[in-house]
Length: 149
Image (cartoon, rainbow, N blue to C red):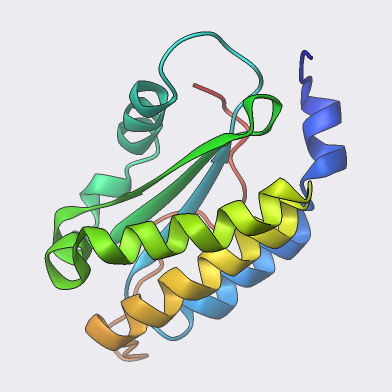
């Protein structure tokens, strides 16, 4: 099944995801990004790594950016945390996020899965990188990226 941008917009509620990112980031100096790709052949992990670089997730001041990269047509996704947050939470945390997202994705609820993942990531980011209104700067866009791979 080929996923066009129009089809992706029908299964992913961009506004709900953007709102979830903004809510989460209001509690942390960390950054959360979501990229949704159309169907493609090849490694989803490699495409996620490219999106991580293209979107600047690894350029945050505290190295506390997180990317959720989704390929709905393949029912696959990758969650990548930069070194600052990964050092604080370890691989087990990312496994828990992946399980929470997968649970919703299995039911075809891509928006719900993304929102749940964003909430879990936001909670951990807030615990390790709390929000300080005097110094916080929104370093990355909060909108869903449909730039693909």
